[in-house]
Length: 424
Image 1: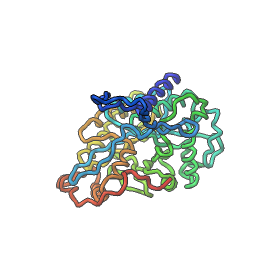
Image 2 (image 1 turned 180 degrees about the vertical axis):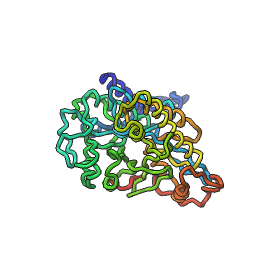
Image 3 (image 1 turned 45 degrees about the horizontal axis):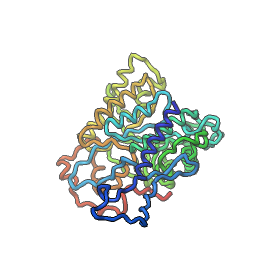
Image 4 (image 1 turned 90 degrees about the vertical axis):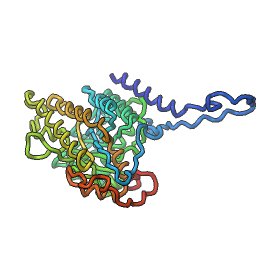
């Protein structure tokens, strides 16, 4: 299986490189103009330089601008905002379940792009585990283990193809330490910086560490690609955000919000997951598969099979209720988090897929990555965003969008949208 993945990856990357090396014909139609005499002494025009450039040990490469990444546009006065929906995946990796590759195809079929939060240790083989030096833990310790070479090759293939399709590669850090006794909630700002640096390093050296030097590189510069994250168990957010700002991140999605328009915190866009209705219950539920599971089967990942369909329907219907009240109301982005896991018989994977199919092809809906959402927010008139933040959960403007967003706009910011919060 790993060999098949490597061949497909090399083909995809070669296509990108070939496109950048294409030459030009003599005339606009490929022929010379009538009566023109060839100058035998003239030298041919040099071919354009390739955008392809290996980085470091060749685990990553610069291949030019990311394909399929739309340029954000500022809302026109009185224009109704699009309904953004973000589907994101914690600890993204490809294993025998092949859920990463499956949801890549689901996204493509439904005009969606997503964010994949890669755990750095998924690019580090078990026999090299001592390279990881987790804060407040002994070398080689990880609560989610490490990977084998076949899994690393398969994950690299999916990361490569996902990025070429316009998806974002974020980070879920490394060892996934939660709770007391060295959990991420106890880490200092400097310890978070160390963890981020290591997460980057494992991605930038995966070919060397796994002994897969002939494999195709990841087609991006991870130092520039990595602009956001979700912390393990949603812990340690305050110190992480301080570290992330100093390291050039642009957003965080580790908190819990209501369905309202985002604002910046510590210089980062707060794109946290949200609370949505929980069918059959009087309280609302966080938009994450794990939280639905805990409130249905507890910490047992394979609960009563007779209830699997019901539990999946509850998650699907809860997410759809949250979508509809935003779509018909304040148009706040809907942020959804998941794991590539078959908890309770895969019922949550089924629920997420059904939500994607029902919402992503609707008019005025954009299923995007966090990067694309942050780009769009950065491009907007700050006064318009401030107005949007006055709308409560599910609240549409009483006089309609045309009158709600017709205030005189602030001048457009200089430079391209999407500048990082701070220099790296």
